[in-house]
Length: 173
Image (cartoon, rainbow, N blue to C red; front, side, top):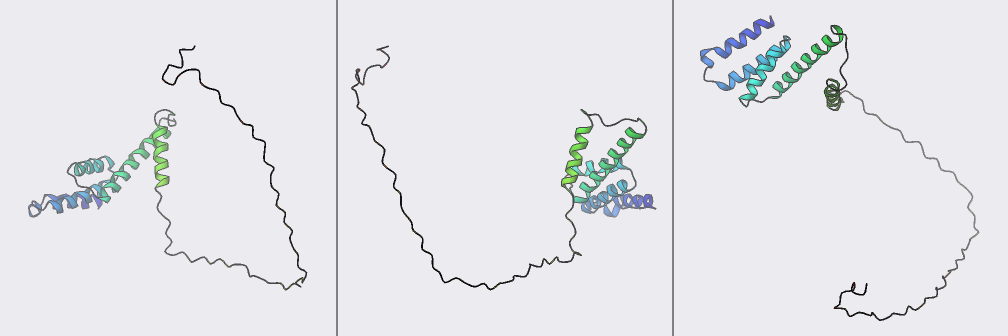
């Protein structure tokens, strides 16, 4: 059924009625790329996405198709590596890009859907007041200021410079 849908898309693209309508043809090609990806034809989907990008046709669904096709290809390769070749990712070659992709995916998680969430109401604790007997005794505070004693300052005597200001100071050495 899905193969038939892809054939119908190409029939519309090649239809003589749509020959001059580039916008419609590009829209149909975007749908065809998405359909290839859904059918598991990731390489064909990527080929069509690259062709459309070369024509400066950009769309979010093309980016999604490219991403999903790339993930499918990577999953196939990783499963082959683990199940058929019985090996792990190599530390120096395959693991670093896989780790980077994993981090990018983790950082690109969608925001949580809060449309159905109930509002959270935090109840503040009740304030209680206690009556206490107040004291009528007044307290006075005595403050004393302490002044630091000045330190003795010795007068420095200056000596005259033996050389004139226009002479080289290194001549005396």
